[in-house]
Image 1: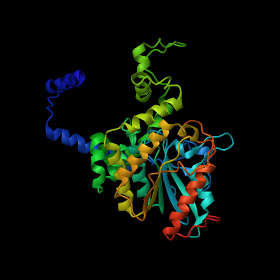
Image 2: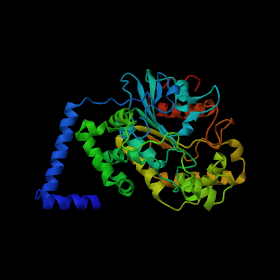
Image 3: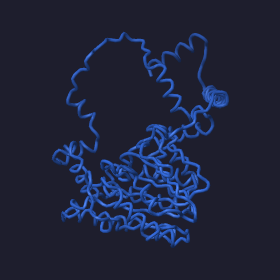
Length: 400
């Protein structure tokens, strides 16, 4: 601010420039015009999912369509006009992580369903690591905008009703703002989380291709200028030792909360312990925000007129056998039932009981991440086959 004040003082005493509201308006107009012209002159950047997370697990019919982390365009839906298009929203609970068994659970389920209405299934996975409910809402609005035949949403039992972290990835807030304009159910969520800057950048993205493609332009410029420096570079310099305060700043808020405030033993290093603590915190939640987000999600698919299936994946059966863990899961089920009451219909299905008591026992990496995707995928295929038949979609579903 000091530099700006000095610059304005020099402009007054030198060239005699005095800023007014009209001069600021002119600057804004010239800036917008310049961005529009630049978008017309400079070549457009085509977003690609080639470097997407877990791209190696993609098949001809199932792929993660999330763009690289930080790309505000969010997702790039595939165009397969002669297929039954499924948009599947979720996080790392959609993965089978076992050695030699790594696969997307949605892809395994689609293979067991076969064809729908004589068409092959094409599944776009709207995937984000550590996805939270508001992130799923952002992804869902993008998914519905692509006009799929079916929407499937995974509700991670650790986070679905947990007010500890309602959102993880704010860089998609612009998309959420864009898709909320004609959806009043989203307005409370947007007003709570979306900044004027998020909305402004999204508006500019629609006006100028350069702004819309700024992620790719930024990557290109970084590659070309990474070695530039106006400072003298010291070779082989060792970074200074971090203070305790700096070390604390590097930790995730969730790890700090459960490692220090809640005194959960080794929560930062033990994923299972951290997940258990977070699940325990979830049932103590008294915030209505996640309920509002979940209801907004159901309103989005209902208004779009698209068939939808919301489900809650199971947790590790060994963990579920503990009375305390079962009590937690039962309470999350009750919270889901209460939040979804009056929101479901013949074409919008949410089973608050989840898959917990129906998926055969299998090995887990921790509480929510399975090693073998087939047991859970089989139950999901059964559910989807029944729903598709009830919707007169004519699925193959051999043996189901």
